[in-house]
Length: 140
Image 1 (cartoon, one colour):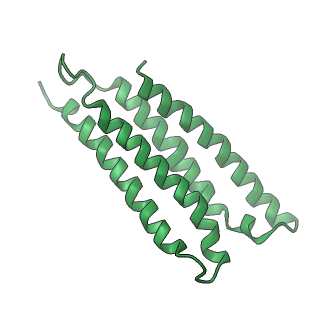
Image 2 (cartoon, helix red, strand yellow):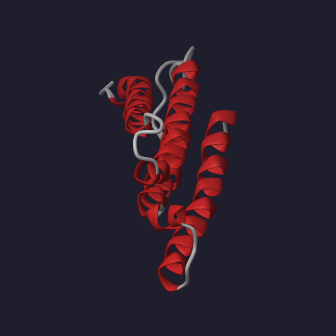
């Protein structure tokens, strides 16, 4: 199994645990009085679960299992996968920070702009993944 695949899968498992923690904190915040930031973790929970766990798991396994590209580049350009990994994780971390803060601070910092940057970096990461995997799906 390639290093990039193991990295994607291990990172996805970390995000799964973080999603479970965020979900638990969100549920507990509804029952007892916790600081207001915990009431705003629902979008963070869903992003950690769907982007962090599911998407990274799928991308890592797909990179490993999809058909070979060429003998010289059996899995395509590895740098595209590292770029996808970095961009998706950077975007997800930005979202985890900015999402709860967006509703707590009234214009103190540009949290909305950080969310836009987060979405853009995740989108670019997805494009890097598609650019690497697409040629491996052509008919021979």
